[in-house]
Amino acid sequence: MHLIAARTEHTTAPALRDGARDADGMAVASFILGLLGLLVLNVFLGPVAITLALVALWRGTRRRGRAFLGLGLGLADLVVLATVVQLDHTVSWSF
Image (cartoon, rainbow, N blue to C red; front, side, top):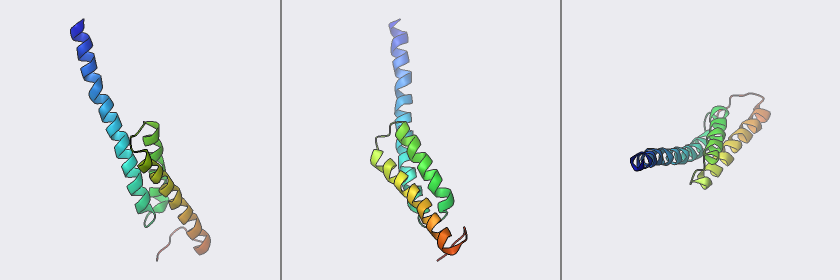
């Protein structure tokens, strides 16, 4: 019985660490994609950054600041897109 309990604890601990690491990676990815989305492909990268940030926060990331920055940048991507669409009357834009 003691062997089974020790074995169960050993197999669940790495899974928890991998889940936290995945959530931390999602938070960082949302920040990077949100930042890139301000420059290119904001119609695609904005929603991806928002989704990654929300999933990272839902999974309990330790990098909550990065996740919130990714969420804010993803929203800013969509605001930039909406502004440019209103000014140019087109979905595509260039400098």
